[in-house]
Image 1 (cartoon, rainbow, N blue to C red):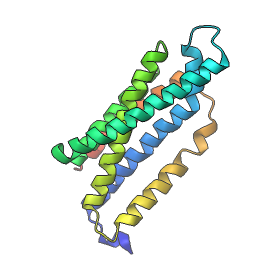
Image 2: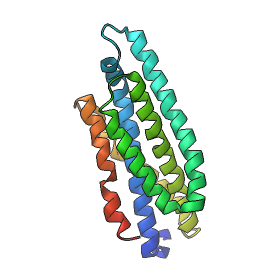
Image 3: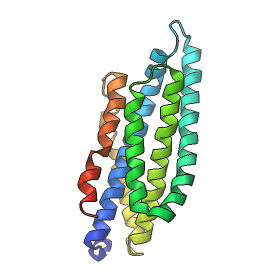
Length: 187
């Protein structure tokens, strides 16, 4: 059994990375469920359905540009500063900017917050994957990653149909950073 080889530190890394993936997929799910209604409320009154669709797609593209940029730059930072520290920083970044998305006043600041959220989301993913790969015993690597991704995907499915206001959905993203204080105590 692969998990019998794991030390306390291995478990700590796996739990932190899994929580990071869990919360960044929560952020992505919030965005997917909320981008249309958010854009409807942020566009000028009387905006057409085509405008809402266009700007929602543009917000998605901006978010994905943040992913690419964050994965690249935080990957470099992780190599220099340390992957665990980088992962914690990126979790704080995507938590803060998901929460700030709730305070958007127009489509442009919403997209700006989504870009910055994307930096943190994919920066966290890159830091978490490399951290797990670097510290896990060779035999445990495939199981740790696969089990983590299955847990993450299934965790957010029940909440997919929740009916809560768009701003409240984004505000929930701030809570992603709460476990960081607890987890850093065990590093």
